[in-house]
Amino acid sequence: AQSVSQHNHHVILSEAASLELGCNYSYGGTVNLFWYVQYPGQHLQLLLKYFSGDPLVKGIKGFEAEFIKSKFSFNLRKPSVQWSDTAEYFCAVNARGATNKLIFGTGTLLAVQP
Amino acid sequence: NAGVTQTPKFQVLKTGQSMTLQCAQDMNHNSMYWYRQDPGMGLRLIYYSASEGTTDKGEVPNGYNVSRLNKREFSLRLESAAPSQTSVYFCASSEMAAPEAFFGQGTRLTVV
Image (cartoon, rainbow over all chains, first blue to last red; front, top):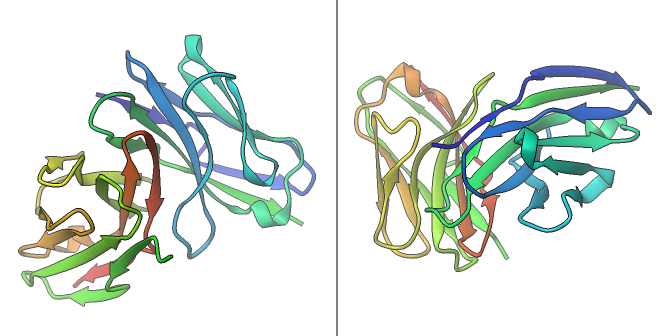
C-alpha cells in the first residue's frame, strides 16, 4: 500500500526567504504525485501535479516541485515566499492504474512572517 | 459551476446519534472520496468509490458507511456518533485519466 511522509510539520520563515518542503512516498510502482495547499479556513486546492515527463514541474503562485524517482521524493520549492503563502501544504500520491485511491501526508504548516 | 458541494457545513451531534453527510459533484467524475482532517494527522481516507456502483474502504473506515447513490452523489453515514469522530470531513472527486482531486468546502462535525 502506498504511504506519504512529510517530515517538516511546522515551518516558520521570513518574507523573501526560500522554501523547501520535503515529501517522500512509499510505493513500488508508478505513481502520480501532487501538492495541495489549504489556506486558513478554506478547502484544499491543487498547487501542482506530476504524472510523467519532465521531473521538474511548475505550479501556481511560483511554486515548483522536483520528482526524484531514485529517492522516492517530490519536494516542494519556492525561491521567495510571501506572507500570503501562509497555509498548510499537503503532499499526496496516487498509484497509477490502480483504483485512483489518493493518499495524503500529514501536512506542513507554513507561517511566513512579514 | 459548483464543483463539489457538501452539506451541511457545520453539525453538532450527541454521542450515539446518527447522521448522513451529503456530497454531490457536477464535473461528471467517476471517482469520489471521503476524508477526515484532524490536527497533525493530515487527511485520512475513510472510503472511496472508484466508479459508480463500487465502494472500498480507506485508511479509517470503522464507524462509517457510504453510499454511491449515482454518479453525482456519494454520502457518508455515521450510524452511532462518537466523540472520536469529531473532525472536519471533506468530500472530493476526480477522473481516472486525470486523477487530481477536487475538494468540497468541508463539514465541521462536533460530537459531544
